[in-house]
Length: 304
Length: 294
Image (tube, rainbow over the protein chains, first blue to last red):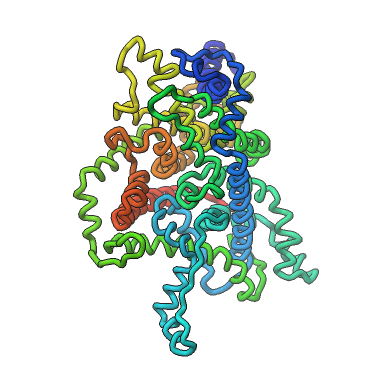
């Protein structure tokens, strides 16, 4: 800037440094606590010099909470949600932007409304749907008299049933069913010049060809952005996996944290708990750090 | 914002939207409708049939002191944590925007909390704020009984607020910085030439220009404080002590899945939905005016 403000600059640095400490301290404390032994971690006050048991604790936390398979499950789920969102959103935005058909605005609003109500507030009935995902369709058939008709004709009583509890699809599909990405794509598609579409059509490209060969390659950045955000979001999901994965084979890493809370009574094993916390913090941190440059550039369109 | 050039055949157009429509019908509209239906009936758990009771479920929750307690707790939580997260983030973003030597470092680090799962940071803060180990134990040594989130409701509320605000400082910081950087430098330089100081420039130029962002974040923070708080509460306090941190979303979960009171939980969901929809509408009326395509 143009003027000299030494005193203000000093305070700026002071406050920013405090902010820096504020942001980093929890990570550092977790990492240090994860390196102590049982006695040292419960010392008052805890020593801020790292102990020597880091790898032992990491190993103990890893085996106690059986984190290997759970991290694997978390990866599957996070990838599934991210991929699902990217694909479904692109298709829908294409339909809304590039076609004129009756009911288009209705579809737009039906999708738009889903942005308002998060899974958390409709959690009880969503759980029931996942317990039998064909329940809505059964109800429709019952209400329209279709099941009655089928029973009359063929004698078979229609009982649609497909449970998705404790399955990857049960974990992933309800999380894909919101429209977060659709509007990102819509906004991007709206900025693609009409001339490009016109040229493609003159060259004889159909809708699908234009979508796959021109639109999708152009929206690479959007895909990466949406994919990253959704990956982090899904990785960090807690309530939904907690509910629908009752058996350990589909449990997520994040929900396992609950098992690491030290018991009341006896010396609390905070060193193990913090080692586990660290393991679970690391994968999304790596994603944030790797994508940071690009992530910030995407958000902050610096044009000075 | 309409396209001049489109692809004709509308049947194909709809096909592209079908996957999304199937998903949102099955996992969004049906459950949301179900929630409305359940809230008006008495549901027996595990498919034991149901009885139509009209608004009785709403009457009984609204007559329940525990529910009002949970609303109050949610409001206190939302108010204080949003306030803290916004103010701290704005101060940090405004100072980082001054582009002194080394401010890139803050920009890098201040984004990190964004990636952390709420339950993971909850467990970290549960340890950091534990009354019997670490630093708060040291304070308790000097001043016995000063800090005990396990017994004292206010301390428990303070713990969950600290954990939540910590995460959202990082989130808000990104958006504030983006908004501040979008302001043309020349505008600020012109004001500097006219002799107005740094603080004056902030209040007269930058602050008014980022009010849409402030408003947007305010709504997002409040909405998230109603949902994203679940993991923090579950790990740190489990709604205790004595319901002091039994926030609305946690109460829905514990009434519905632990108490198996589906109807009561559904009625609570409806009230929470209405609250969030209201917030979203307010937000949209405010923001849509400022969105430009192209």
